[in-house]
Image (cartoon, rainbow, N blue to C red):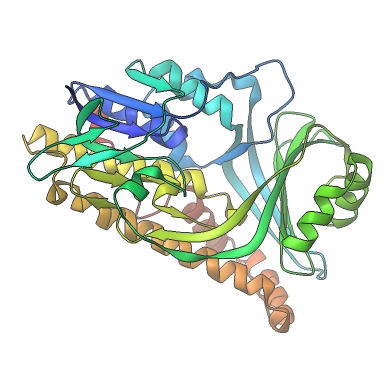
Length: 391
């Protein structure tokens, strides 16, 4: 039976970033990726895809380090430098400048990573079962073995399920509605987020002109209503809800999609010969656009851990070899989760609305505080500070 050093389940941006980093290190002999979906095809000429990602400085550095950043279709990469956050029921707002974040389509990132990763990959190949016996490697689908099996397969992770790793957390009883829209203006350097009267955020994220992506958090009854509307009706409601600083929307460019919102944490990120990264390990509210960035930070931390152990001649699949990754990633992700919960609860609490608006007014005039907030969102202080694969 064939033996791989690493098997990664999930060929999204997080799993592919990990694979590309490990491959670049030249420390491992054999890597394989499995994914149940068909190989993605990025249409460089079509309308923007509904699924877009906000890419922070830390994720950009990882993509640059593995050579994927230059492989992106640059005409469909948009950098925004300002973000304006306001409330539908308030007069004050927050404005963050010098953001230097990018909005990029999911398929654009996946396509770029597939260009740099040239190892084994099997699409339309599901993880069905694993077998882990004492003093042996992991047997995957009775087909091959690996020293380390990595779950990068979402919050319903099959790796997590097969490994009997529990999950705790809660549903927000909300859905995130996404679609692409065409703006009336040509300013693609500003992102907007408005907190509606019920505390739910409505974000307008600028793609290349004249398009933007919306991410509208809605409680379940509102979600059902919004999804039932025609495009013309939805456009009318959307324009009525956008903040006073946002541009108006000219048209809806593609079909609305939606996903459930929840806060989840795996009880363990590791066990013997198993590691979890990205949404398989944790998921948060999307209001700050940190989901994929947290996952890529996971990938970088785990890659560093695997490479250092491989250089030292250690078995990369032993639990003690993976403990550094778990402790670093959990601390980083827990602090982010706490911050997201605080922001969410602050905007949902109507009784502190005057205090919240006063705070926004004060912070808006304190540039040093805003710069600290920008830096935290751009590059987590507990994230990877160096990359072992470029040494």
